[in-house]
Length: 66
Image (tube, rainbow, N blue to C red):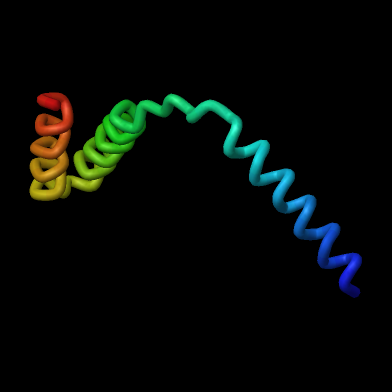
């Protein structure tokens, strides 16, 4: 049992060291959020929920200002 635990710890440590050596991913969260907001605005317009549409349009304006 101890041997299995040691091997498991070694493989986990090996995996962690590989992950730590990788360069960080460059992710553009603003573009994903902008796409999602545009989708929600279209859905609100389709459902004739103009209050929700106005709220999300305001958020989209704020996001575009950043």
